Image (tube, rainbow, N blue to C red; front, side, top):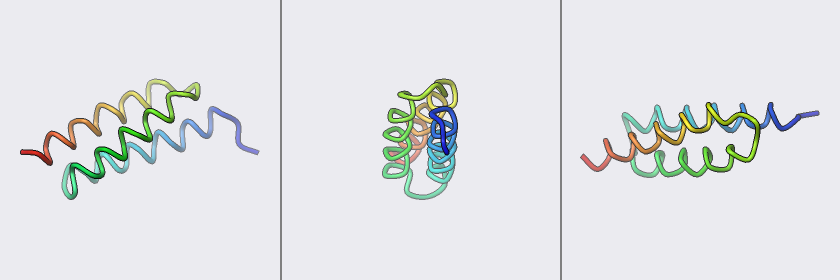
Length: 66
């Protein structure tokens, strides 16, 4: 069974993967999804990973705009 810490890690790593892919292709949509997943992940104990995913998602969106 998954506890909230494991769910937070899964959400955080999924958001990180999407944001890193967003650096290269589809920056705005993938960055937005990474930010949303990071915000959802903040409800779990894994705060640091999800804040990092939010930051990387924002950077991916900025790169997509440029």
